[in-house]
Amino acid sequence: MMTRLVTDRLMMRRCQSSDFEAMLELVSDLDVVRNTATWPHPADPDLTRTRCVPFDPELGMVGVVCKAGVVIGSMGLAAKPDEAPQLGYMFAAKHWGQGYATEMGCALIDHCWARYDWPLIRADVFADNPASARVLEKLGFEELAATTGHSVARDATAPLRNFRLLRPQG
Image (cartoon, rainbow, N blue to C red):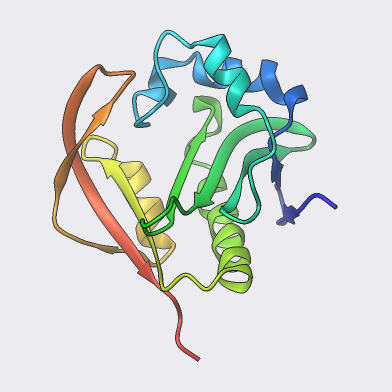
């Protein structure tokens, strides 16, 4: 059975090949992908297609976020070997500022604390994206020392704000 996270307004599920068109539209917006590390601009249909497959549940939960059955964004929380799990998200620009990232982020983090034995979760945002940093603060993340990171869409390295969320005790 496919995991579905449901909140008052949203539903998240693992990506499927049928999400290709919606994901390609999402990642075709430079305002969206410039805030990500790995999505290029202009959008690469072949790369997008490779990412529209169910994510390995042993590594975390990554998928699409839907409102009323329509894909409005993507969110994920996953661990790579020998790295702390990382939270990432992107939403279509017309859905910014409505609390969707915070709402689904809370559900996703709760799901992952229950499912995985991770001691902490990491996240980072480009310094020129204060709205995304505010989402992390609302989710309880604490800010760490700043670094830099590469954005494929920007074709540049830029300042990063780094965050972590420790597993709740008790």
